[in-house]
Image (tube, rainbow, N blue to C red; front, side, top):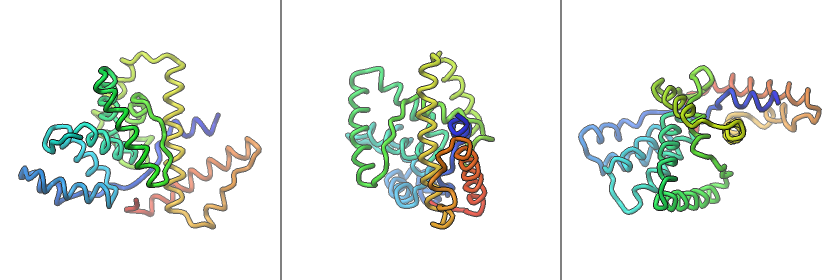
Amino acid sequence: MKYIYCLVSLCFAVSVWAACPLGEASLAVKNYGQAQQFFKGCALIDNDAQAQYALARMYRDGFLPGAEQKLQTLKYLRFAAENGYGPAQYELALLMLDFLRTPEGQAVLSHHSEQLRQIKMQRKQPLLQMSPLAWMLLAAERAENKWFYTAPPVYVAEAEQALKDAHLTPFHLKEIQMQATQWKQNKLLHVARQIMTEAEWQRFFPMPTEPAAASQQQDAFVAFVKNKLQNYTLYK
């Protein structure tokens, strides 16, 4: 259980976000088409969470109208949320909850899930099933539990309140904690594989089978990755 608790109480780094100044400049003068082009470059090529979030908000607010406006909003919110960006996690949770209230919204979510499945297959990445409140739980984490990019406090407070208002049963709370834990576990391994050499990786894997030794090794692995991240300014 120590391993699970460790993952529940920490959020793993996925990237260090850079600004997308050309997109921001274009948005400031209301050149939305040009802003879209710049933000897409930062979002898809640089995997920049702020650019992904900016695109999602532009679609959501109608600055980039189109037949798939809702799908595009969901897609870019999901990208930013998967990058650990707290505001995107919070807004994705709210949007999913809103869509679940109507048959039309449920159809949009179903289409989004299929679209996401295809994207993950192309990228050879696992597709985790994340409920809206699992994203809300991640958004509610305190800054001291995040290694990467902290959400503005207002989002943390509002996410905490949303979880309280949901009146979760112990069973439901455990379910979303398990989803959040799985998300973090995958992110940790994904990040570690990008920044660790093969020799460093082999220091920790395969993990011991004996529980106490495995727990100790897991703690050492987390500490090693966290320390190594301090030497990186940008990675995807």
